[in-house]
Image (cartoon, rainbow, N blue to C red; front, top):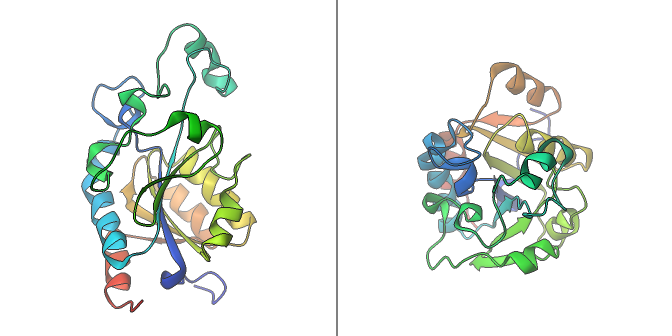
Length: 216
C-alpha cells in the first residue's frame, strides 16, 4: 500500500451502490444474485460509520417508465413495459436493512434534478443516470466540500456500477476502499484489477477494526 493510496479513515465516506429493492429482494424484477446475502455485512459497516458520525452516501438508479433516462442496453425493455426502480415506487427505495432510523420515502423529483437528499445525520442519497457515480453528477464537488478524500465502496453488482465508480474515483485521485464481502458479484480477477489501480481491497472486519481506534 502506497502512502498516496492508503485510506484516511477520518476523511472517509461510506458509499452504497444501487442497494434498492428492485435489485436486491429475492424475486425482484432486476434481482442481482447475492445482494440480499451481503446486506447484514453492509449494515455492520453502515452502523459503524453512523456511530462514528462519519458520512454515508447511498447512490441509486431510477428508470423512468417512458425510458427517457435509461441506458441503451435496457432502454427497449423499459419502453416495452419493464418496471425497474421506477421513480416514487417501493422498488426504487433503499433495501430496508440499510436504511437509517426515521427513513422517509425518497424524493424522486429532487434526486432526478441532481440534488443530494438528506436522510439522516451526515447521510445522503444521490441519483446517477449511468454505471458511474461521477457521470454527469456533482459528486466530485460534493465530496470536496465535505472534506472527504477516501471513498469506501459497498453495494450491488461489482462488475457494473461499483467497478465503474471506483475507476472514476481513481481518475480523480481519491483514495479508494472496496469492501469485498459487503458487495455482490465480486470475483477474483476483479479484486486483482482493483488492486492494480491502487484500491485497498479488504473485508468488513478490517474496516470495523480501523474505525474502532479512530478518534474524531
